[in-house]
Each structure stands twice: as C-alpha cells, then as structure tokens.
Length: 179
Image (cartoon, rainbow, N blue to C red):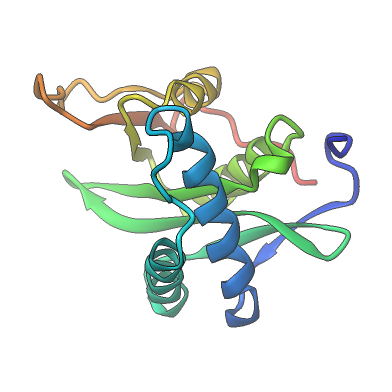
C-alpha cells in the first residue's frame, strides 16, 4: 500500500548521515526504471549502489550543489540536488538530480521536492533552470512537462541522443507558497 500524498512529508537539507539512504533509493529508482527495458540486468547490484553512493557523496561535499531530502516519518524517501551556473549572462541553475524511492512514486514526494527547489531558486534570484532527462524515461518527461519544463530550444538532441535537455523560465514560473 502506498503512503498517502504528503503524509508527514518533510523537506530539509540533506546531510552526510542521509548518504546511504539517498544512494539506496536512487539505486532502487534506477533499477525500477530500467528493469522493464532490460530484464535480467542487475541495475541494483553492489557496483551500482557504490557508483550512486560516490556520486551523492561528491554532491554533498560540493559548495555549489545544495542537496535536499524528503523524509516521511523519519525515513528518507526522496532527494534532489541542483547546481548553480552562469547561463549566458543570466543567473541559471541545473536540477542535477531528483530521485524518489519507487515505493513512494505518485505520492507527491517529487512535486514537493521540486516546489522546494523552485522556492530556493526564486529566493536566490535565478532566472532560468535546466535539466537533462533520459530520452526513454517517459514517466520523468511527463512529470517535468506537467510542471512547465519544455525542451531547450538551444539544445536539440542528436538522432542518437540518450538525454533530452529541458528548461524552465523562472521569471514566468511562479514561486510555490511556503509550506
């Protein structure tokens, strides 16, 4: 049974103590996404977990990469990381990761993490946000489209592209109300 949307969901800055839980949920989400496309491939193997652990460890240590986590009843069920960058003379930000434990997909965790990122971006004065999404991840593409993200007109994918670059104009995207 899935948890009710927003039931005791809390968004906060992630810490090193959250690293193992974030790496595990990211590994699980990656495995769930790819299992249908590639049956029998061990996307949740120890090497995959180590790769995710190392990547999130770098994000948590980086000064230019805020990391948020979503916790329900004290259990980390989602995480987001974004990177500040200079975008053609305008302040810009890249949503580097937004991951939700598959057992919590469809319960508002991703939307709540996204709204928290939007509030921070508006507060910091960013005017544009970007992200890369796997071309074949139709679930994520629909999620972002529903939040106002559009294909970046300046970065068309090549015919053999594995990713699609999306952009969000923060000047026209209203900041979500504070929780």
